[in-house]
Length: 326
Image (cartoon, rainbow, N blue to C red):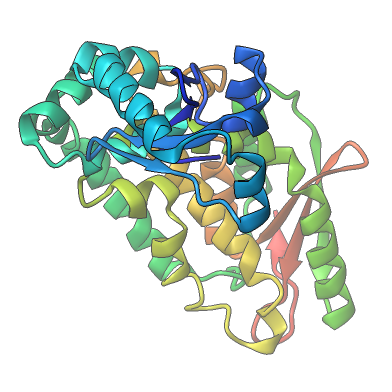
């Protein structure tokens, strides 16, 4: 993938790819042989056109195309097609992977016109909507930082645990199932739990992929302090996820806590996007990761679906006793 608009030029004209920033995909759509054109990128954030670098062998193949003339055609096309905000947005709306470059547009007026055209909000208007979202995220990150992961209380409520499992599966539009509890008696049990966690991560993979797509599509266009840390969540949660998981006993399990923490935060982030931009996540009835985080906050090691049951591992108490599940 190139950055910006994929351009092609020869001695007589220039072309560009629509609905993609890939030269290969654009060449297919244009029905041209990309090896018979010089390739360029138009960087809309600073209005520059750059030609791809070619090695000596490639230059021999393209020697019949004058680089100076081709560059002139490419620049003329970029100016003609993308100098106005409406024209730029007409291309940009179909290439969401380029949205994060919008924040790099140096001219404030142009940048905000692009944001307003695509998303209906300038940077200032977008900032006004962040208060409640940021408040909820800060609360969640406080919980992530303070959770007693893998340290359950002596007595746990089976009804409460089942309710959280039901919520999580329900948010994914999956049917209710029973729970299978297994105690983590020794290192072999921990190893088994880690193996099943890796294997069952797919249960929530699609929901996370959808949330990630929505978060990156919309919010990466805005340059606010929360965009990266909160949309992707991983950086922030990883800084706190080791508080109770640095010992050898938990070393291989802490990744699951990081995963669930980050995905809980990312989905919460997405829930505050305008509905029209929640194309991929609107099919979910709620944040499917939060109930799983709740279970980890209770000290449990929830895995996911296995043999038509929701498998949850239960760590032992510091004195070696088993927590009671009543």
